[in-house]
Length: 315
Length: 249
Image (tube, rainbow over all chains, first blue to last red; front, side, top):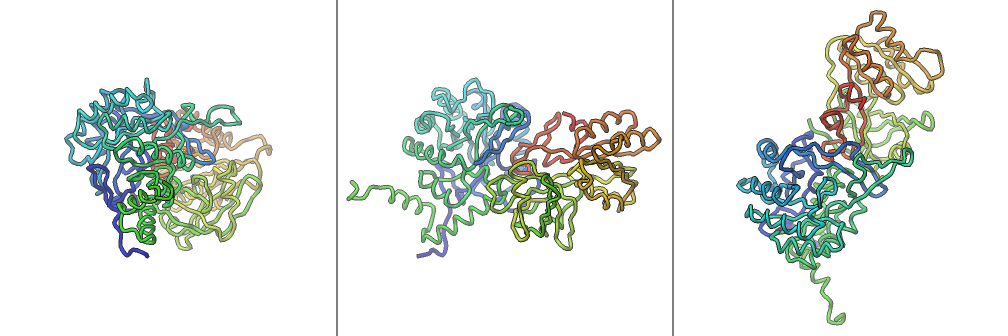
């Protein structure tokens, strides 16, 4: 039985979204890019590229290497610094009409606290995503790979704001679930699962790494099964919502990530293959739910829970 | 300025040899909006690869056609060169910052497939009545691409590898020494040409720019992959033409 109208409304803790589709941080831009040919207000939210406390230029080129099933990047978070971001860039995103999620990247727990404190009083910031897992910046330690440091960063950020905090995790750990649980204990309201995975390509003609910084983070189709396992792991360890990200390019991928336990999805490299991927996926998700006779995202999640509950015969 | 993303149809794909193909596509939205110096991102409909950046040699806003010369160097350009009449491909464009057709005499220097993005610039300069000289270089006669079209705009100096002693860069320098004074120079397709033009810039005082290439995943400023120059400008937004010194980095 098909549904004539559906609701894509999505809840991530206290954050209400008109639909569950948003860009992954660093894969969508409206301030240093030509104008969009679609209305960004249709997006569930806009997650901005990570901003650092101080200005930085990012990593040296070449920054990209295509693989048979994805893309390795080592962009290294070029950032104007939080002050310029707030004054000059944030208003551009606020004007677009979708909730704005600001991603921040610090080099210490104190920096995360400073970044979050700078955003705390701004009504235009709906939530803050803590990028704890960029494989392309020179941490002493990556917070998402060190449970104690992760908890310190999240706890310091928690102490600096009442805004919703999303902790973005790395796949490059023994258990994403344990890290999600650690983030929850330290005060995260949600987890974004996953960032890119550390990777390298070699130019067989020069015999040198194809990326200027030697290695980078792999994204794209290769990441989807890794993301599914990580989202499943996170949702089975932590009791906070999970935003799924990694290799999502079709509506079937969106539904699969929901089936793994996600409450929303972020789209990254798919927007490089097709810059209309996000508007397309929102339309396809609406059509998918109609065709399946599912009235809402909540009903989809209930159906998933029902499908994954063992029947009496199975028990 | 905004970009369009449209599903285009291949009108023809002709191989000039194993390394170069001429692709003519029906892409009306892009053809209507292109300006000289801009580029497009293209990807076959069924491809699992990222789109590739290409600067068209020609477009017709009335017929809705765009012509791209493809240098076949890897799987992405191989897939594009394998397209046939009626095949579909995604086109995103127009992208980048157009070349400003400022007053004064212009010299355009191109090599190989790098000749072709210069043609729209030459046409625009010619249309405005600017003095234009063109210097074209290739490894074979049949790769002096669109030489006849350039000849309709201004004097063309051609050089094919192994034929004669004087390269186009040497001829350009000789012309400078003989009193030729271009106000602006634009280079595409050769690091050696770029270096020569840059080396003589201080002596003859022209403004010089170069069409640059850098790996880009999106072409629209989202991926930040195509950083270039001392300030790491994004080539897709602030290029693809950049000050000549950035072509030497």
